[in-house]
Image (cartoon, rainbow, N blue to C red; front, side, top):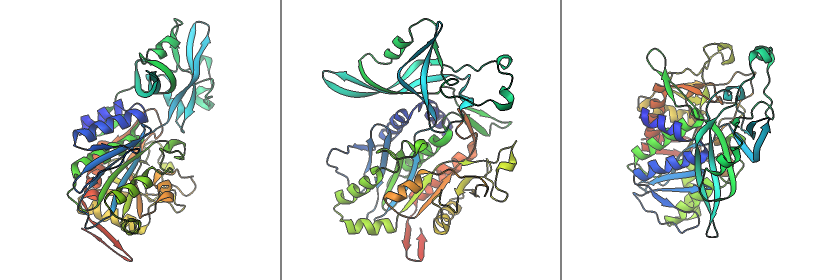
Length: 424
């Protein structure tokens, strides 16, 4: 498990690479690809996946249809990064650097002085046909800090200026543009490239109980869902779905984001392909459930004052169930009771999380998915440190708990009928 997780975190340089890695896992486990532009053929006992735009993916298994409902676990494949602009090469004397803009709300000072890979999507033309190619550079660039001797106030009041401070050093030989062109051997029509941390994941702590890595938020959620879905197969009833969306870090309002129609369209197509009608879909949704898997702020060892006084999320404390009165998270009493019951029966540790009442909460893709197609929903995840940093941390034991919880969820039969809910 640990080596697989490390490799997934290391090589999922962009949302495109995360989806490629996810597809490889699904294919190894017998999942059949479907395409949005084709007719679908699915059957009871089958395993399938469909992607959109190369950066969003839905994978599902078809179990016993006597209890037709959906069990959905969703996560996002994007994360804060630096996006390379068109005509990117800029010069300062002999130095060449890249003109970039920020993607998402990163903790940008952490991106200084670390190895950054160029990665993303290139659209090429070959024999008059446009093709999409996912690439990653074999070289690194870096954003050098300004020395303390030249920035005496750096430890007091330094503020990162994205247009000045975040431009990475590419070359001193005048060949920077050529290096970018060498990312592919084909004729380039358009690029969508990012700079993302190339550092390898590592364990730390006296007992190696923690892991630090780029892209912990939210690729740990993606990998846990994949492992649970592929282990679960089709032994329980209904449709089990892993939903992986792009663009959560910038609001999700894209065709491949949670606020788009990807999930809604897939649920409708699954229903109709199984020869069921719209009435059966609405009945199924009433007894379905969505788990939004995204991480929570763990209690910081140096800043305990930033946590809520009675609902702290501890690294090593188990799966975090996230609550918010303003519905930044989807959790309510019923959905919390369901997931906590599933966890308890599977022997999974869990804990509750509320933000401090005087702190603005972040949000997750669960709320946006609910606006398109509604069902009972809960927000869960890992407790982590340094969220949106170039390198984030979590407790390894918590990941195992999360994977077990999701496996138990997919394996359960949940029947929601009015004021009564049964979990088998």
